[in-house]
Length: 535
Image 1 (tube, rainbow, N blue to C red):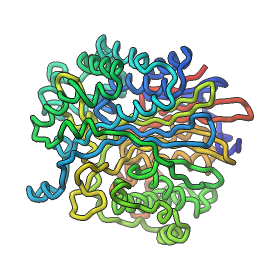
Image 2 (cartoon, one colour):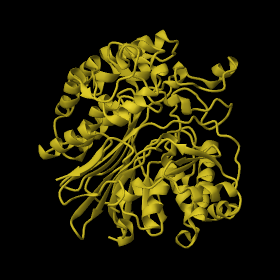
Image 3 (cartoon, rainbow, N blue to C red):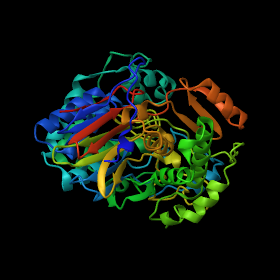
């Protein structure tokens, strides 16, 4: 493996931090320790990476209920044999067959808010889990949900970051009576060390375990979801649920300084990460001052997000040529448009800001490697819960545009632009890594930032995830508290408007693979409660 990816910088033990995790057998990384422990048990009991990922995510539906759930969507990157024969799984659900932005425009509504029924697309996650396991799982399907059934019924301890996020959403959780009964405790949020239960979700998991995807998209669970949506004015149909499918799609990729970065294609925003990296590659980042590097990163990110908002949409209804956006001549033009002395102001994006999701990654003893992400879009999604099934709906439809004729306009049976993007890395036609960076629509910028820290500046995986983050969020730079104040001042002199200090930006997990040393390197972001673990 090229040593520059591993990095030659080691942890400074005079500062608070965490170390990389090393193993020669298996490795996984998750944002929650209970999910990680369940994944390790699955692997020790003969399960493969797919089995572990599904079981871990099911746990996260209870352990991090504000971030993920059966009522959300799922994307996957998978290398079944540890090679660069990578496939992508699109588990994003579609809008209802009756959804139309024109109906909102008639009501003079230009923004889709989380609690609106129009924000709730049909959940695609369970369809994705089912297809993934059908083609690549090893353990019996029903065994994967045993831990989730148990914890949902008996309770799971609320960890510190989860408690912090929960405390910020009391008002949202109070709006729907079924949600407040489940997710509030005497009108207040669940606190650190509390037990949280979702007994009805336990029954839903039991039904999924016994009946597979049909147990979710047909029968009592689907009927419960349908009736809840109908009660809030939704125009969804039972047929919308029964018609939900996931599909394998071909990954997209581009080169960054000799490393191949693999992403899911649109309707995900992986293309944006590749655009940002392709612009960064045109600059000699190693030999410039830190303020100039940060400036270029921010300007490249703004370009990528501008292109996302203008053009990305459901590829079935918008035949987007990915290649044209990675065209060298076009990217040369964008790179040359960056003014090194002055930040460019773009028109305000109408894409909704949101910071939430979960990401996990697993590599098993046979080399199978999975990069897995599942999300509710906003914290606690729509804030709307189906009462009998305990399913909290996501609000992914917020990402639709209401502008007449826009590629991402809300229309029937359509997938919205997605922010959740699992990724992989290869070099010389060998898989060398699986990673993801959480944080809503920060994710594309996060992919580019973390990889640049590793490839351009030699940080190892854990150091790269630890590194203070910056995000040009609608022309305002979100900057984390541990940033150098002198650097912030220099960015302000270039015209950047600063939000400092911003809350912790996102999270992240990573596994790197060093075949020469027979070594797996795991890393997990300090911004969450989780860890990397191997054996």
